[in-house]
Image 1 (cartoon, rainbow, N blue to C red):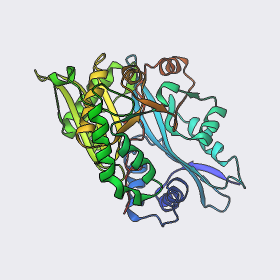
Image 2: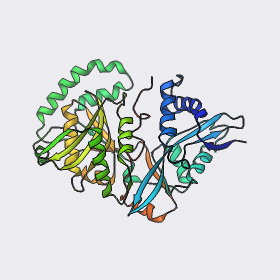
Image 3: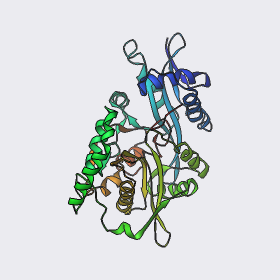
Image 4: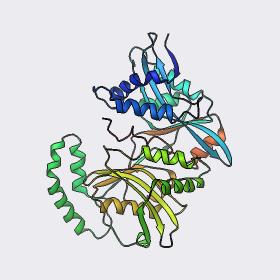
Length: 369
């Protein structure tokens, strides 16, 4: 009989192979770097919560056929501590011979001791499984926003994803963008032009991991349900986030007034001519729009053709009028038997996604040598 149990050191090789084959869609052998990282993230990093662990699905012959990566998250809700399970990496084999293996694996995780479970990376197949467990999809947290900055370069970059040789046309695209942007004095759907505004009165500067971590811990307290990160854990997460070779250079900034008061921050990755990937935007209540303006200005100044990221309710409202497009790539889903927690999440009073998700890990956006 097949079974489900906790992820152990001896499972690392098999899980790394599943990750390569099912999630990275490659036949390449899993590298020692990937194996070491899976052990570091899902065993060493989570050692303080031994009863909220990643799980594996095991065939009758003892081989591994499925995996859910679980990261325990300590949270706070209206002054009391809450235990959460962040269920990220989900890979399951044998869909034809054992179609319910994934469901058994997920059911085992959701029956754990945590007060709530969530994921921000659920695809259509996983979403159906979560729904069958009476989980809730959080629509305002499940959209990707996209702001085109340079239309010709964006079209070229999108096409180059299928045919990389098209990037040789980069100089032509940049020339076309220069003409388009010169003609438009106002912001448009097709392109972005930095305009004078409130952002000119702010200081937008790089932040160290120590400063960024401290401000994250400060801003997140504005949410009724939020992670409780201590400074060392937060700095460890940012060290994990230091490299995402597939997405480009890390840009980790804090936005301050001229008097030095921090009102927001952002973390994204990008390279000249590419599409930037935003992991996190945080701000003092009411300052989200101006922090987003600073993010877009920075991405434009660095030569990106577009910038994208994940929504949260406060950010969604602040993006109205900023000529962003919205699309659905994966879902943020929550499961809890506590109606008060569910109400807080469905009403947009919870901090989820990004740093309260899987976006900070190397598993999203990095190469493993």
